[in-house]
Image (cartoon, rainbow, N blue to C red; front, top):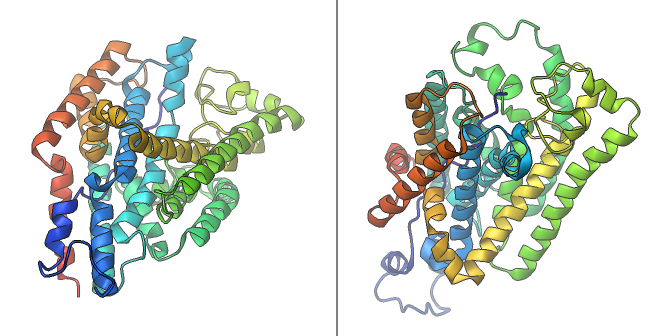
Length: 434
């Protein structure tokens, strides 16, 4: 059974800032304490600079940890043993399928807010330059994702989809947390049903011409509707991440409410799917007789994709919550998991300094997620792995050890990963925006 690529949040802002950078950003005549007479703009600049530095607190370090965990989850989904093998290993591997990619899409929205201003959206020239940087990053990801897809690896590469996500949600970057949350919920409730209708309205033979270009990659119709990560149903993850990014994540009360919200969404999504499948007459029977590409039982579709993916030949497919099923219940459940993971990472790195030190290799992977993602695609290509998942556990361990060792050593000497550095260079023209 071929699985989808579980990877996304690949363009987190550079880890700049920190106390020294903050002091350099303020004229030397200004005392470090910043008296109330200092203009609000200067105080805000210092606050934003401190907030953007990884050494200023555990918030962004926690986000890097969450991103690193998602990278390792993607590795497990692609080069690990098939979850259908069962047992404890199979169960743990199955947890990574789909949920890692949802976490990265969620963190993509979080990154957009970091790049455009958390406390208050950047305005004027600074705002236009931030938007230009995101547009350039998105276009680069579209190009790199298309190139990786054309290598022919069995991985469903998410980078091109990811670039499109950035472009589509960019007009929302000035909104506050509440309207962003409302848009995310509305999208989760409505867009999966819209996608179901659109997919049935599309030609059976698929898109043709410019809409399917390039032929060996994902064209615009695939990116929006028919691909492995259709924008129509993945945008709610990104917008939800933007809403969370607007909150004061240093406040215990905010974290507590977020954790409760995340657990509630997970229960509503997965539990709601379980109830629907068992209470709606004929739902399980319809799914069991439906065409799918897995070998598991339809009764597992409330949380697992070992059964396969709904073919769209029965509306009962809208009741499942398995990853990549593109349903309302799937979006709710996976968003809940993403929120819980992020809050847990934020809390853990703040409360337990020893844990932060132990998690440093995973955090390092999270700071260079684009590099880590591309490296695993290259590794799969060079090793000639043509069936995913299905490799031995030793192959998975080898991939994880290689990426964590590389990221840890690299981060000792360089502030950003190699591809992150190149991506930063690519956005330099944004400084020309007036």
